Image (tube, rainbow, N blue to C red; front, side, top):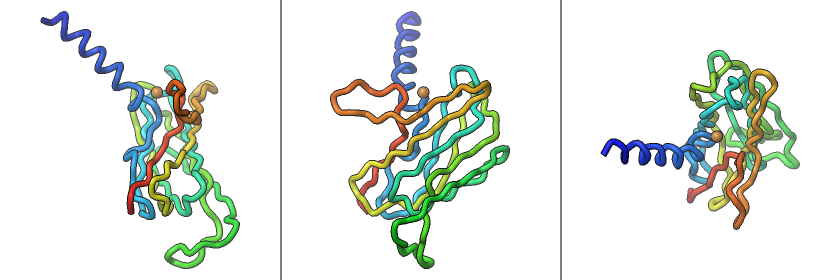
Length: 168
Ligand SMILES: [Cu+2]
């Protein structure tokens, strides 16, 4: 019996790896037009190298994004000017966040961590937003989590984290 259990356990682990081991957003879906907490889960380093930066590019349509401070990590926010100002609840908003980066650590490959931000999800129920991530590691190695899944194509090796927008 023991002989059977071990292979079964292995299979379960291998199948569970793709979704959890990459950089993914938790939860995978939030309500459109809501303030949502997104956790970018980092399941491994670059090979065995420790992670020293997580750089998240924000999709257009996200009018507000606030990173959660993280001990041991410095935060950098880059913004872009909006083509026209939008109402932001507390007045007009003239620029939108373009990217948020956490730099520091290191986060060893054997460990797991989450990088959290709050966003204002756009009013686009049914859409899927893409958040490309560059993961930088000690020694110059990096993972570019930027690939998009195409219908009929094999699942990309380094998929970009995505977020579905549900009904508001
Ligand atoms: Cu992975």
